[in-house]
Image 1: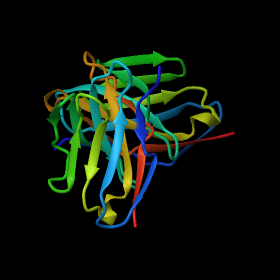
Image 2: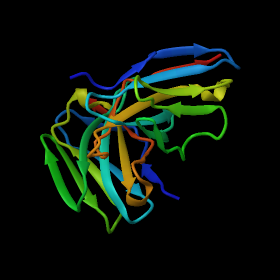
Image 3: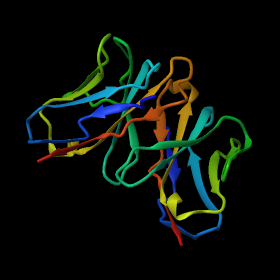
Length: 112
Length: 114
């Protein structure tokens, strides 16, 4: 059974702080990992993808992958109120084709 | 460069009616995926299609749900004899033929069954 787990939150951070979002997954052999941002009532928007162990940085966002511990995280530096949204972790497993498995999301609120 | 398009954006149906949801992928994308998001739940994969082919329908309910992606026109997700439990947001995503990891989502269709 392939599962993706996220703390539903809500997570609140002050403006300018670092927001840390975590995601764990159930099955080794996973291939690709993704972070999506979803504003209330809107569609998911791809923020980051990461495929190998280590860190990947893109602007204020850093994705961290640790396959041995089966977790992937997203750090948001210098958080802004516009970052307030639900963040979805998605995993694509090698032997499941093109299907993405999503966590239930973590709600983030950045307080001005 | 237009993104993934879905229509209608909102759809209201009474129990027992049929719902048809349409999705046009991004230009150059030939792979389409349908996901369902129930209230307070995560996105769940339903079906993956290429033109004229259903590649993976492992997430589709066995009854009342069907999907197609014809040679011409949008992909259609069809729900027959809708029930209240079908009320959800239905999202379509598309990817280019050479990189299925790049799935971009449309705005979704919010189905309400009365």
